[in-house]
Image: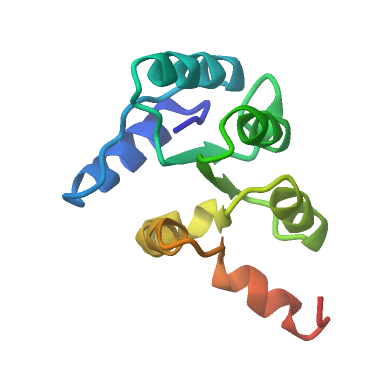
Length: 138
């Protein structure tokens, strides 16, 4: 997982550790450290199945780091957490290959649903996002 806020990473890690089949194998405060972590894990043959990252993760940002992750490790699924509720942001997230977009404000209630849907091969978008755009038929 990658987020500049240590407290948020700790909260996510604690929540994920409560689910028996999930394990956090690493964390980073910015995108450069995340890429280095993924490379080290790959060398140790411990490549994660899912990366959870902040849309505004420092250095490259969530969109560019997702593009790079997908280019080097296409088997890794990506769940992006963000605060933006606009269609353009969602289009960018999904356009670079992320498997999900979760509003940070809903992470406490939707995180496990998002992880489970992505784990099963689906795409997850916070329901608040889809409700907002249903009338626009996007």
